[in-house]
Length: 157
Image (cartoon, rainbow, N blue to C red; front, side):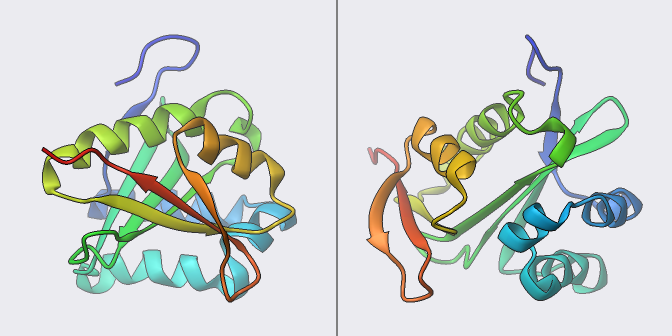
C-alpha cells in the first residue's frame, strides 16, 4: 500500500479481478486505447490470463478503494530483460498513480534477477515518456515499430 496523496493497494492480478479488468478496458478513452490497446491486443493478452494463466506473464493491478486504477504486466518473464507495459485509468492520469505503481512493481521484482525491463511507447505519448524517464527508464532510440524504445536497468549484486 502506498500512502500520501494517493492510497493505492498494489498486488499481482488474480482471478477475482476479471470484472474490474473488463471495466478498466471499457473505460479507456480513444487516446489511451490507441497507445495501450491497439486492436484490443493488450486486452486479449490480459483476458488470456483468466482463461489459462498466461504463464509467460506477470500481471499487476492497482486499486484506489474499490476502483481498479492501473494495470501493468511483464512478459517474456523467462528473459533477463523482459518487456513491460502499463496503463493508468484516464481519470487518474497525472495524479502520481503511475509513478507509485511502477516503483512498487520494481520493489516486487527486485529479487527475481532481472537485469532490467524494456518497453515501447508512441513518439507522441509525451506524458508516458515523462513517466518512464521519471522512473529511471532511458530512451535507447526508435524500435522497428516506429515507437520509442526504453530500458530500465537494475543493479545486480
